[in-house]
Image (tube, rainbow, N blue to C red):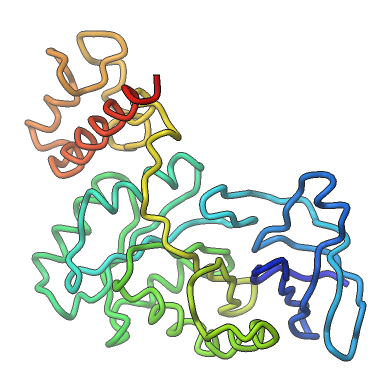
Length: 294
């Protein structure tokens, strides 16, 4: 029997089998011996142990088409970052850190600015404009009022999308809009463990409609300095790439060097100053962390 892991918690994996329901599974010991860990999003083969109680063992993990290391999820097609335009106001530095994490993992990213009913059109246009200019597909919507969600639905269709963003921006409301029974499903999969409903402490996959999955994840806003070198950072801002190799000095990191084509582009308004400011801030953090590493 083949299904998809929709949640993993405390050594249990919950596998959704189309037409049958959700099975509570353990992974066979062979996976531990081989150093393989089943991940949410994995397509797996299971072997029933107690059919009446819908319990089974995972006996085989089918080949993965992709694997994220942060959060640990398999077979994801894209990420959708959700930020609020108000309550809380968006922070470019935080948003850019999310984007850097996704860029490092070669995962396509879309950005959805929620709560546009709480702000004016000029503010919404400013924020969406910053990231459209950076090369990202962006949306402004109001989940509460159901406004602007049709284009987002089209982007989600027939894909597995990981949802990310800081707390308070409306991620749960977003998921509940597209998956009305999400809380019910969470309750079903955690009933034996006595867990509360809809707590985002573990990655969880919800089927919104046919071949369309939304993956809710615990927060991963922290930026691990030790994970990368400062020289890598400039390649993770897509709008910087056209200026690479056009500076006076080879290997220009676009911070203090004279004759920097990127800094000229910022001064001319070709690259958004907010994005460049984020870059300089994060570059400085990486440089400082490097001092303590060596």
